[in-house]
Image 1 (tube, rainbow, N blue to C red):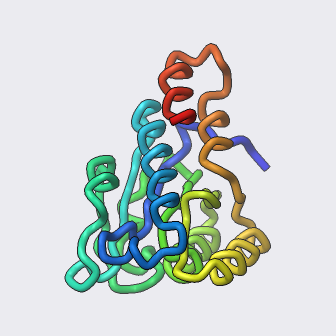
Image 2 (cartoon, helix red, strand yellow):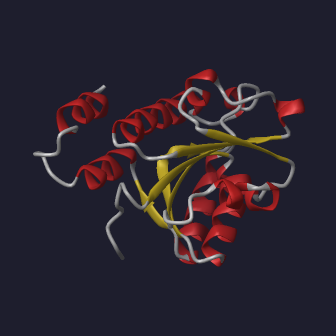
Length: 178
């Protein structure tokens, strides 16, 4: 397993939509963690892409996420790769970090396809959610078995920084502690 590098990473937020989030188990916590990692990604110039499942029905991603996304891919398939996510990714950034909802549907199906296409996929376990915790937990088990790395927002933040002497360390630490 290789360390996750900020210059090889892209952060992908899957379906953090305003009509979906109230139904997600611990949805407010999921959203808070997504915002924290988005703020750190912006500090480190890491691209952020969002997806929205059937936005005409489920609405758009919450504003607190949309403001960080450089691109948002509208989709109908549960696997975002089927609706253009691959085209939105930078070719020289093979480390993809996924967060969002629902873990056992869109996050998992997208991650499995990205793994099949030889991307290095990491799942932020404290920044994903499902309506039922059992679905989330079983999906995490399946994703780990399939080769995705499982990590937390704080773990990723410190891995991206690499050192306390990083120029953005103090600002990132403030975000981590918030």
